[in-house]
Image (cartoon, rainbow, N blue to C red; front, side, top):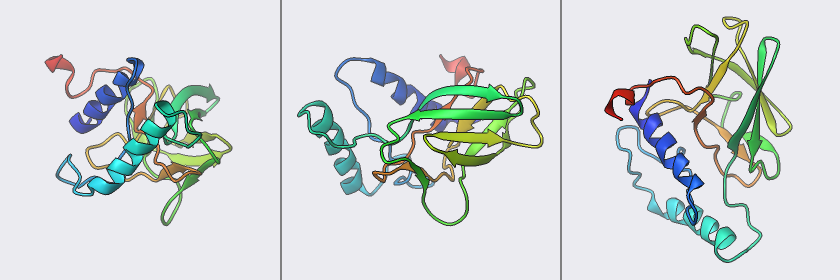
Length: 168
């Protein structure tokens, strides 16, 4: 469980309000400080949002955002919006940052593979998945981006009470 992840989730929920925008900066932040020192890239990503939404410019302004989850046997298939130019990873190794849980609500790190605009998530430890989380930690190791080089927004598909639930 992560209070920072729950804060990011609350920020993402504000996108349901009119005239709001968000720049995902999960790849820019500091490990022990929620406020990144690199303000230039934060500003560039916010500018893309303004150009697209306020000035009707045809520019990619968001990284991949969770759209839906489909369970197919022992795998979970996650579909994304804003997968402009396809999904890709950055850095060494495979796709990182995905966890999966069954009905027991116990998350384990998962194998994840990009297939088009979806990510297929599985684990030998979870035979009947019911939930997926991505980048759900204070300082997650995550590397999913779209073709425009914008990072995927952290998300969870469950609504199970978390670390800050009692404070609500």
